[in-house]
Image 1 (cartoon, rainbow, N blue to C red):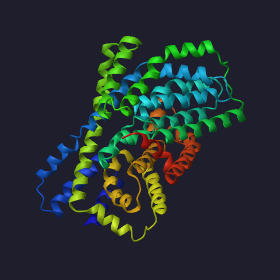
Image 2: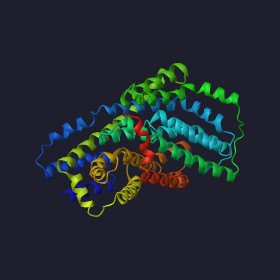
Image 3: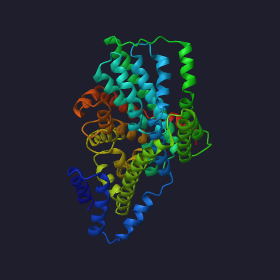
Image 4: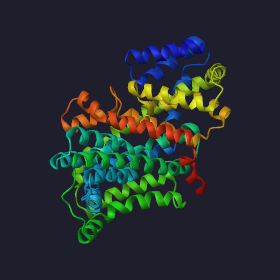
Length: 424
């Protein structure tokens, strides 16, 4: 029965059926043919699957990111970055990376980060003489840091699946995010110096001070949201509400970059995105329920542990499998199914689920820019009016860099876990 279930799931995915439909349809078929459980249970599980309080955080972070993407918070972050490093070799490229890192700390979404920063930085890099392929590849890849540097929507979802502390999971993302950003900065500096790409800006304390004053509300947002979480002032869900209200107040009343009528399309976009995500989560919870009732995760684990007896081999195979899956499907959705399957292995090999969550998030990042179905590839294609094949070629060097960082973090858990010791 376990084998047949997995075959049905694989077959439907190969046929191109959306993963949310695959999960719901597979559960219906399996409940009907293989169990005596009444189908009414399906509706109870669908409701319960979308009832987690933590999912409210996802919805409000999505809305907050949409507001900031349409407003001026991103542009003011870029001005601060350019004032800091604009005159160095690769200064404008480094500005783009730093801006993505800062925006990641207030949006929680990779596509939102790419849209907000890429819309401004890709044309600016090309105008200033940077190679077009380099500019597109850099910003398409840097945008993925929106889910590694907290707050992060996939980290919240992983916390829902595995029952781990969202605060600790967020804290675990800081050093990996800084490490990845540093690798991208080092690569950009090297390529820029080799090609003579240097900004015309000269560092000025006056301009730097003006940029800081202009961008103070943008820079304060991650301090407010993340500081509030780590100091225990509010929970992760409450932090999402704070982020949403803060973005509204700043963009409507302080920056005055949006009007009330502009909120209608923003809320419509946020509602559609949230509804799609909740539909996926609800169907995933149904399939997870079926897996749990029939002990499929334990059956799979017992079968595989006959062949996988080493923790490091397991981690290597997981990364390879997720990288391949990232080319073909949405790993964010799949983690709801994979989480229960992975759990017995984590217990057997003594792998911290928070560390494993960071490994998953990094794989999701790479999946966002991996052809043929990487989400950021399509977002970048829409921004630049270039074909998916061309975008795919531009991100190849950055995919290799990110894979190297992935394996470094995989086999050195300290990078992910050292900061979690400072929070409850």
